[in-house]
Structures are given as structure tokens and as C-alpha cells.
Image 1 (cartoon, rainbow, N blue to C red):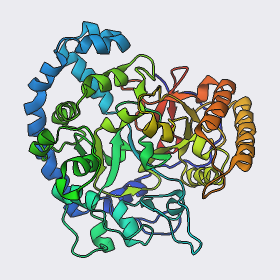
Image 2 (cartoon, helix red, strand yellow):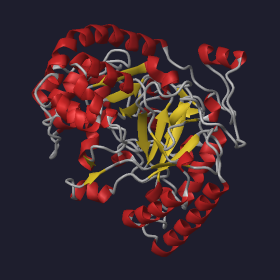
Image 3 (cartoon, rainbow, N blue to C red):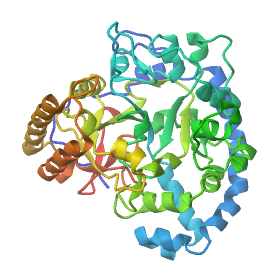
Image 4 (cartoon, rainbow, N blue to C red):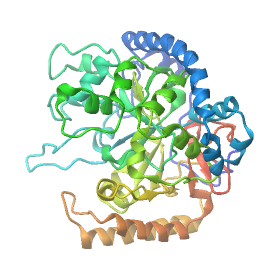
Amino acid sequence: MLLAASLCSFLFIFVASEENKGKYESGISKGTRGGARPPKQSEFQKKLVEFWREKAKIRSEESFDELIKVIEKPGFREYVGRFYPPALRMDAAALLEKYVEELKVSEFVHNFPAIHPKTQIGHSVGFTDMSVEVGLNSTYFENLWELVALGYRNRSDNSITNGAEVGIMKFTNFTTFPPNFRESSQRPVYTAVNTLKIDMGNIDFGNLSAVFNREFSDNMTLMFMIDTGIIEFSCNKSLLRNFSFPVDCEYVLNHITDVGTPEYFNHLLLGNQRTWATQTLQDHMARTLASKWGEPRLSSTRIVTYLEADIAGALWYPEGIKFLLASFPAYFGSSAGHLIRKWCQQRGWALIWVLGADWNEKHHKPSLKYGFNGRIVDPLLKTTNVTCHPTDEAAFKITWELMEELRGKEGKGDTGEDISYQQGAEVWGQLADMVSADIQVEPLRANRCENIAAAIGLNLLGDCVASLNLF
């Protein structure tokens, strides 16, 4: 599919000149705000990824036959075929190959809050991750420990995070705590692999998602059968937690060294299937391959069954990020929404607004099912190749003003701008009815776009939507 023709001007284009290419490889170059960017990867990180890559290749090949047996079980292909009819005519190996093709273009997403509430003396409350406020003054996406070393994040010992990184991934332990910046910079950035093609990542971690550029980061990435925090939380009995996820800890602990990479991950698919109590492989395969985005519908608790991908390197701005996903109910028409737009404008990133799910119902009504299939490109930033219809821009401006008014009337909480998910969802429906098919998008699919490096999804017309700064 050819890229959709552009009729828009744009704010920023990143051109990978020969000079810039040299900077990528040599390590330190200057960010647009004047700060130095760190090397893309340290020697330690390179050796660690290569160590796991060699083991992953062997484990992936060993797991192929067993994975085929899972797909050949009665009912598996019939279930997938309900949503992707070609599955009924494919043998197990062909179906797996098709699925793997899609996994290789699946999004790596990292959720975080756009802003963090502050105390009266300006200190952050519950600061656990990145924020737009930090990002606006950074030259790359800092990992959790760098935020501690830089003084952005609370300096409490996070035993789950450190336990996973040292005990499972084999990063070197810190010599002091809080860690210094040099040691912190060796640690990874966490992501979820969006095999379920949901509209945004795990909202437990925040209502904003960075979707990383896999062309930039795949060779720095380690992958795991499930969220490593869930492994620590549910299977590390020394933590004495009063809640755990329904995973098979015996299997997990016997396969704790099953690390994968974006090239080699058959063993992770098998491990994910065996770790969860339900049939995750057929669910993920059906959702990934489904002819219609949003089928089959999912309970919100299902989204935690993703593979984890952790990037052992520095995700430079702007090229380390493809685009941002922002929760419409949480941020549209808010001061945080203004900051998100400002960050995207600063870096030339596309911004996609999403409907998502109700965080409260996710926890109190886990049986509810969602399509997780609402994405609309922000046409006001003009950072993609999609046609900018004046009616789309007008609809966004009117809807922004409406949400501002709602937040002014209903505002509660730390920001004074909070509204209910139901209110936001109602306005979202009105916006979706007003805007064109050009800016309503779904996640990328394999073999549909010529310029896969720049593509960020497919619109309702079937055209490839691309980020202008990645051409």
C-alpha cells in the first residue's frame, strides 16, 4: 500500500544526513535543547544483549516443534479462523509464520503519566516514571533509575524492578543506593509488546504511551515471556505480597532464563501460553490477525498478558520515538494535553488520541469487555502525511473547547481538570462521528506499507499513515 498523499505543511522533518548518521554511531551528539546525548549503547549493554541473543537463537529453534503442537490442538485454528478466516486453510507452520510477521511490526509501548501531582513545596507525589515535563527538558527517554539519579523520581528502593533486572536479566547490581547516574544509565527502558493491538498500552502505568521506533531500538532489545514485574510480584515469595497474578510460578521459575530478542522468540510464545492459566496464544493470535480491528473484544485485565521488551540503550530524541498515544478522557482539553502537544511539536512526533478503557472499571468490573480500537490522529500538529481536511481541524478545535468547559465544571483532584471516563467517552463518540476516515487509524500491519520505518498505522481508507520526521 502506498503512503497516503500529503496536502499538509508540517512543523518539523528529521533528515538523517550523512553527518547525523555519523553522530548516531559515534555516540554523543547534541540534543536540540543543548544537552549532550549519551552513547546509544554502552559496551556492557552491547555484550549483555549479544549474550542473550546467542542463547535466544538456540531456545527459539528448540521450541518450534512444541509451539507447532500447540497450534495443532483441536479448536485452536477454528477459534482464530472466526476472526481471521484464512487461518482455517493454513497449516500450523504457515499460521505461525504469519503471526511472527505481525509480531515483528508490533508496537513497543511504554505508558507513563503526562504530569505528576506536586506537593505545596514542589516535590512530586508518587513519582514513579517519566513525564512530559521531564521529556521537554531531555535529549533522550530516561530509564527509571536515571530518573532517580537525576532527582526526578522518589528515592525509595524498588526491589521488584531491581530484582528483575539483576536476577532475571543479569544487569550488574548497584554498588550504592540510591544509584549514581553512571550505574543507572546501564539499566533498560521497559516496554510492552502490543500483540493484542489495543489502542494504548497498560493504563495502570499512566494515560500516555510512547511508541518506540523499532528500527532504532530492536538491536538493543531483550524480550521476556511475561511482564518481569509480574514474575517478581507473583513468584518471588520473599516479597511477601498480599496479591498475585494467576500465573504458573513453577513453570516461570524453571524457565527464568528464557530470554528472547526481536529475532528469536518462539520460546517466549510457548512460555507465555504455559504461564497464564488461560489460552493466551490463540487469543493473541486471533486479535493480532483479525480482519477487523477490535475483535475479539477483551476484558481489560487481559491486557497484562503481553510479552515484555526491554531496551538496553539510550532512546534518543527525536528518532527513538515514533509517536505518542494520549488518553482522550484523561488529557484532551486539559493543561496536560497542551504540554503533550508542545512536546510533540518540539520533536516532530505524531500525536494520536485514544479512547482506551475506564481505569476504575478495569479493577472493579474485570468481566467487562472492550474493543480497545479507538485512535484519531491529531490534525493540528501536522506531523504526519495524512490529508488535513479543514473540517477535521475545526472538529478538533470545537471538541477541545468543549472538553475544556467540561473540565472547568467537573474538575476534581490534583489537576482540577478531571472528568469521568463516561463523560470523555461520550464526547469521543461525537468527535469520531465528525472527523474524516483519513485520521482514524489502527495499528500497523505487516506487509502493508512500503516505508515501514516511517509508518505508524493504517487509516480507515487502508492508506499508510506515516510520521514525517521518519521519512
